[in-house]
Image (tube, rainbow, N blue to C red; front, side, top):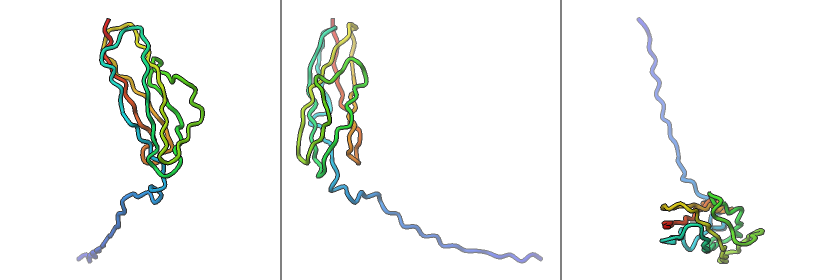
Length: 131
């Protein structure tokens, strides 16, 4: 005859949702618009557009990098070190150079910041190149 021992455990866990205690003090990047749709574009042409950045947070927002996903988009001026105080806005002028091929285009621009809740925002450029 085998003696058996049974064990019983009660496991409790407390789950706390992630809350950034300093989120009310954090910077927050807001883009006035998330895209520029040019509609119809001509091949081998240059187009200009603006990206308006705004700090909706309560601490200084630093724009760490603005990185287009292709060489056809560039910043039209020297950026330098961009810091936006709470409520402050800045407009960045961009340049888009179309290629010769006739097609629908969708290009992305990545904006890297010190916003702890959304460190990367994506701005999209769209259009239809027609010859």
